[in-house]
Length: 499
Image (cartoon, rainbow, N blue to C red):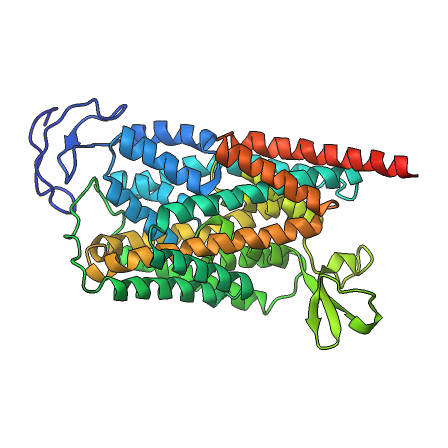
């Protein structure tokens, strides 16, 4: 039918009502459907390409900013779906392992044009950051991170990088935690995740959050089951969705077994890299910021160095164990370079420098994996491309498999009252994990900085520039690097004058 002609009411998932057309709701969109709060634009592959090829290069600011950008572009301006439906997709991404904004980018294309649409929208959103972070990782191998000026640069970059994670935590907590109960769940999740960094805990605190709001809202009337709201497809059938979920679990089990069986040498190194990132991507809830402390522990190995507390003149910032004071130290600081006892794949400085750069790149924060893969592979004498493939596909793979596998079932269970009651608690607890990650990264960046107090001050300036004055994240990161170099130069001048 042409514009303005009635559409078949039986088409699609929820039936929908017949619609009146009009081609002006979205650029390039033709026919429209009359939904619950419609009309919603009918979207083609060309529309998906035009929107996401631009977003891939311009979506700065991290996951919270990406979600806000998607809301403005696809809900408010282009009318691709209803706002409640979009928030449900966001909630689903929060409740599944993997990068939330990435999963939403795949889901937007999928619900309009099926699996091909999902692959098109998702990959267009990822590839600019993937390419740029791979190149930065390749270049980082030639940088001497032991130079004082480089340490100053990295300290400034990482200070603003961590400040942007803090900004994301603040933005998400304001948006997702509107009442006392959800704020308490966010706090509880953050405290537990900060103190006990166990994989099972992420799942437990999110499930507990959902249980709390289910109990709280059990007597309240549940909103009527949502209608179509712009959904044209759920991608695969439920059988195919179940197969994708089984593939995810089978790959996870297989690589864990193989890593524990094979030595870290030759081609097996790629398996180790893939397993570390695939396992991390499979157990992380709440988005990219949550995975950062876990990735640091994967690529940098630590040992506890203890001293007799009676031999120390005053208390030191270390963990007390009996009569000893123990400090967690990277292993590469304890042994000579090249010592086989060093298990780290990179230094803290290399990790934090890449984190800061990734905060200034467009697209998902998970593209940081490409940088880590390139640095890891080059440090092991391997081709950087091999490292990028192992780590990038490892970290992104679980979330992508699961969003494609779960969406066919989500079309049914999204209408269940118990699911809708659990959503506020699930989301609040997931945001708490982001808050914990911000504090963990703050600890690491401060400890690694040659001038800790100055780094904190640079982070405050970067946070204010981006979050208060709405400056661009890349400019904030670059400014942090400049301030780090300035702090190094001023300290150098001060030390020379003292002498």
